Length: 221
Image (cartoon, rainbow, N blue to C red; front, side, top):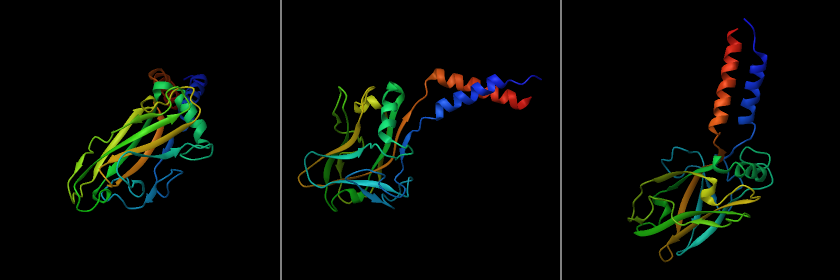
């Protein structure tokens, strides 16, 4: 049977076009991976399936507080040689660019023996028209915490870049956290598996399927 070198080459090019741009992934398995205002935790929170390694952020007082958690740098990190350039490339994909991460709180996140309440949110910041985009209470399981409740509460977030105000044409990016609580009550929360990634367009997936099929045809002959 006749071989199909052109189709095979097309398949390789298409596959490369989907995978050549690296996503950014911060697993915090051994350190804070360039995050700020956080403390690396090797074994907490207990019961979290993503261990080893999380980062914990401590908002030590009551009322509204905010901390920069991640300013994407011009250096390597997250699986890319240049995080800031990678963020630009992702933002320019528009609706196909997404951010995901996990948030956790446990009994150690609250003052021992005290019933209290808290709110936990995030902020996206960039140099675009949207700028500072504050989401005041994203942790849907947050709220009143009974004294000595050691339950591990978790939430997975997966949203488009626009959720944080990151838009095509933006040239620098920051990720912040914000917290609100009663009196002098601290708010401690854990973060894990911060991922910035692209969802391929349906047309790209279709072309990739054609290319993969071409490779399979070639292998059969």
